[in-house]
Amino acid sequence: MGFMDFLSKISKGKEVSKAESLEEYTELKILGEEAGYSPVVERKVKVCKLKGFADIDICARELSHGNLIILDIKPLADRNMTELKHAVDEMKDICLSMGGDIAGLGEFHLILTPPGIKIDRTPEKRIEDFEETIERVRRRY
Image (cartoon, rainbow, N blue to C red; front, side):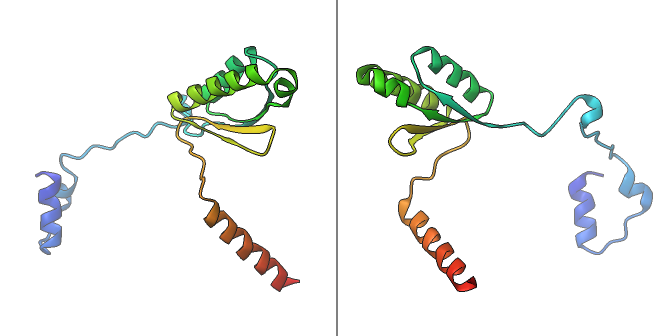
């Protein structure tokens, strides 16, 4: 008896014997820590400084490990704006090709996300949420 037959008997109110209900079914083993499997992936928020092109490789490696990066671009901005533009373009290409995202956080900071994490860029919703939160806080005090 297949699983669908079993379900149809149950839904029609027919009695199913214990032998019938257990035949053809095997218990599945779920991988756990004892098998060396850990379902929790440790992700971190890393803070990096962009001083030159060598730092791009460090950021790319951190992204590939699933870490978020807050990138301080001021050191390179103070030194050479042309090099900064090329470096930021390179970081953007790397992030997007991996399936991540990149956005500015003020004048001298960027946030880079690993694959599978996108940045919400809808300011209207954030402003509404912020104003609602402020109003709730005001009512409490």
